Image 1 (cartoon, rainbow, N blue to C red):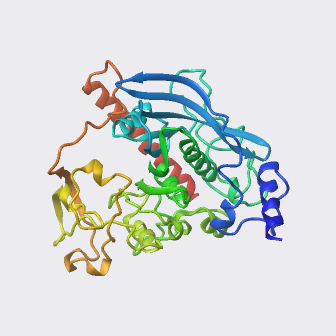
Image 2 (image 1 turned 30 degrees about the vertical axis):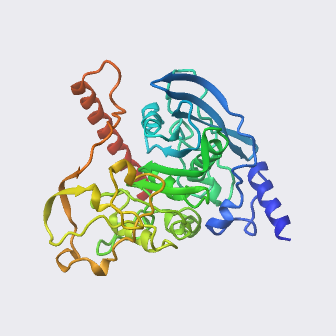
Image 3 (image 1 turned 45 degrees about the horizontal axis):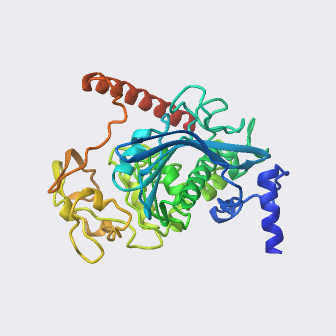
Length: 408
């Protein structure tokens, strides 16, 4: 009977059969039982390839899956050190309004990874006219029909009743899971060492995807806390608004329902004044992790107020208590972070207050040069910085507009 039910679910998702109250997933586990990341051939297309400084860069596209009879594809950049094998792999997921960048994949490859940056947002990532991400008319990405946050049905959604797979979030996470499958199939990759990282919307997708047992480490950034449809403590009316089907959304799509299922180590990058992942909500997520050693406590701050903070890399330690040599090692896949400090252990002056940092500096080691993805060849740093701030302001404006739409 269970086998027959699973087959029915798969037919429902892939062939577009009518969903009824009896077969709509009600939990995260039921939702993802409808998607097998190995089921369909990837049909990988090599669009372009180059080699520079012994690093191979490929512009590729592969199948995400067939939804309601529509075969969807995602474009990506894949980079890896030449003539290497048994490389750890990493999947990078861009944020809202952004796109996959070759510089990101190249940076990770320069650090010894096989890296894939997926272009779920559909924007042009190399040359006009290149085969690109194609959601086949299903609302997703940033080209009409655009991103659909809700499970509520609408024009072009996979189902015409409230259903988790009506939301674009699951399509993007499915693309990330297929990127893991792609890495597993590459001869230079150690398929047992694959990590995941993403920023903003990509941070949320990191949390949604980290429940995949193939993920060995995950690092979301300012996205993925969950609980955004619940008021921040002491701030009535701060919750985002949803017109319908909130219970189904929270149970199958909100990150609050994913944190308890994440088995791998997690390192979260956030800020105390971030509207997209309020720190209070991040702590709630960490508290619900099944493995309590899956989070990291970086340092203690003994008094409230404004601080300029220097963070030595030797404050990072392995599970055996050995200080790490450098920041790159601190973020590598072999790290097992220590337990996050419990709120009841925080010094009293900090309780109930929000710390604000003027500056945060890493000290005590050498650093590899970080990429500046907004710095195009031939541009001066001044021009590039101006372009960056202009794009940053535009992204902030877009994020505010999206949040306002959620509140309607």
